[in-house]
Image 1 (cartoon, one colour):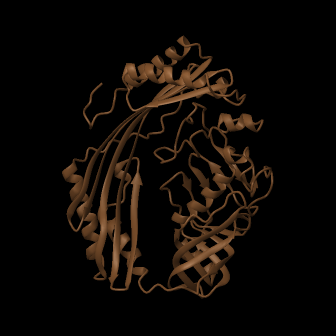
Image 2: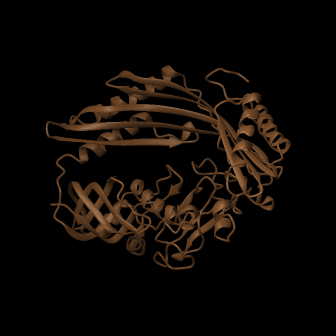
Image 3: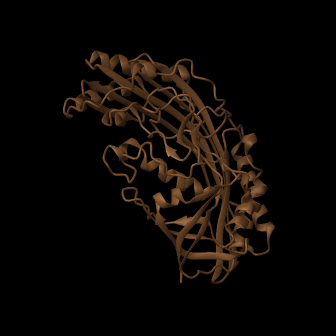
Length: 447
């Protein structure tokens, strides 16, 4: 196996290590076992004021092994993919299992749920950019931000990232697969104004295929536009008004739903949505479907982290919670079946309406546009929601002025039920695909 920092291990090497781990586990008497190993290489470049701030090559290797002796489980990890490291990891996992308590929910995902002939989702698009070229692209991004508006007096830098990984998973059901994937990006943080009136904002682009990235100059200009638009921001009076979550922050709102219906929260009864399966949580027009097989999408996966085949699956249909988000362990704890979500959600698509962002602003009439959230004031046990926010105040269906130093608050159950529209401006830079979300009313606390 090459030790070149720019090279991935060979797929055959990863397969051999998985097979070795499973064989070692059998030799130690394990009734079942699973192993995952991966190799990742990448490059990240950051520049500030035209000078190189950081230039890093990344190279990671990882091995994870779990063994099962009845309901007893042992797990071990290693950053070394050598044959000796595999033997030591399996030995450690078996030693640990001997001291763990029996848990009938432990074990592999059901054999009949393993992926067979998983589809090629076109996730591997290496970017042959050199460090010198990455530096020049980052500089072009920063320069575009500085030249976009005379009020942009500084930046917190611009950067380019390149990543390629090779990930293998296998278990004693006979499942074994090795998949390559890539993820690349360009970002910029612009600073507008001077003295006491200074504002910062950012923009970024990310894609599997470098040809799908926004241009570096476009990213810089967008960061500058967002920063200058916030100049002169002030607080507002405390009142209850409609709130429009910009698509990039609306993703987080849907993420709270996912967190509240994850098996790990539900079987511990640490969610406000415990025992709410089959209930209407959203307006009747609301649809959310997990679509794991979208080619080149950032959240796509032919199978989950346990080898379970993925497929399109509704989470919310006609406003009703149709299922939870479960891996095999949490499913057994709850007397249910895995939903192929070991490792997380895969392209949860929130059905959007016909309105673009400006149409949603006009529809809102008067209220707050949220473009940035601060703090961690979300309690998934109670559903209480309270976070610092910044954005823009709207009067008569038009943006009136920038806003900062406010808090938005409500209960997640009320926010979900109070969604008025989902915009057509879908942000696809993550595992949740949603447009901007307009909510009928929240408490906006300011002056």
